[in-house]
Length: 151
Length: 151
DNA sequence: GCGATAATCTCGGTCAGCGAGATATTATGC
DNA sequence: GCATAATATCTCGCTGACCGAGATTATCGC
Image (cartoon, rainbow over the protein chains, first blue to last red):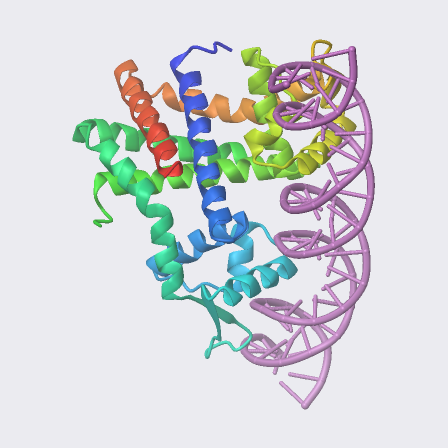
């Protein structure tokens, strides 16, 4: 396969971006005494909070591909750090709801803030039509990756 | 910050792509009895081999942010799996060179092959100019992420 | 109510990765 | 030329994330 074709160059570029984001997460984690898994969990929890979805340990475990024991340990960790709070669901009292504390929101912001700022600034060097093209492409890639994964 | 601005939407999209790629790597790892770190190591080793760079345990450890003990354990694992071979550098006999076996190249191909195929196929739905725009954007993002990381 | 099902947690064990230090090889100051 | 520092890797002991199996608690259909 031609290594210099536009498609291949984009593949490598995307992979480089992924690596860079991973490193970013890992360094953020190390700096705050968290584990990479904790950061991933925070991302999912903040997403859920923003979308109004109710998060439970079981749901979180699925997102992160952890089994129930690992999930319990993870939530214990996050709770000990004061980032989430466990509370019984009053409707179905088998369920435990995970509520993110303000501290977690702030932490998430110090993590994403700088990257968001940089990327938004970078985006300003492009015209609206160009950004739309990028959006279409990334959407297509997202679907591609999903397809490649489910094979 | 406006959650619906084009810049923000691209940030979220990029993050989604990153997550998807990570999941892809994790599932590939699990399916082949590898750890996520092993996959990351393979990627770096294959890159080095392709670029003609000589890989050593120390270099690999830096790439993955592992200390020397962890790196030794990692290389032990990869060697046991028949993916790399250790050989002393004849010029500086303190050094150990890591040579990737064919098996590793094939494994890398079964990992990247499907994704590459999908992304290249997706790229064919775009004009050359559009792909160039995407390339420029991703390059800018890569620099942004690097900057955000070194703060 | 009672068995079946569901959500979470507990216990014991495995193994990746860390810190400290050992070992071997090469560069440097005098 | 020889002690000393610097470099590259490995060994040892340990911590802790995660897994598998099973216990616990709560809900639902009958």
